[in-house]
Length: 155
Image 1 (cartoon, helix red, strand yellow):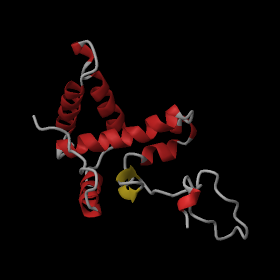
Image 2 (tube, one colour; image 1 turned 45 degrees about the horizontal axis):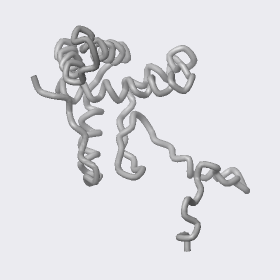
Image 3 (spheres, one colour; image 1 turned 180 degrees about the horizontal axis):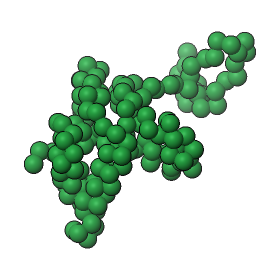
Image 4 (spheres, one colour; image 1 turned 90 degrees about the vertical axis):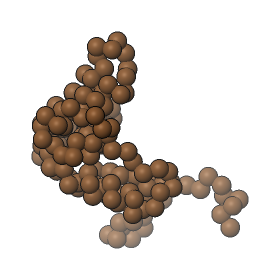
């Protein structure tokens, strides 16, 4: 069975990342499929007695084929990205499913976007940077997360 779609290597041009984001966005799925697919992924290595990424990927790919999510390698990566939105929120103490059910459902349909941090990354939905200034705030306060690590090199 083929493996899950791989992300472009570090330093790849934006066009390569954009092609992957476009492919990921092309697979239509529901939040129910995201949940069940990620559950299949997590159960994939249960019988092996420990963590086994290859068995998890096989289980996720088999789920995508059974659900008709095609191409399966692209759908599998899309499920991982979409599930990560919910899991990340939960790990920060926010249950999107309970507190914002409408937003929760859009996780399965939001388009993927490419953004750049140190290298290009792919995200579900729109990416907002913390450095954006509010045009309605006449005197914006400095963002405490945006500071110069190397003031001597700042020129």
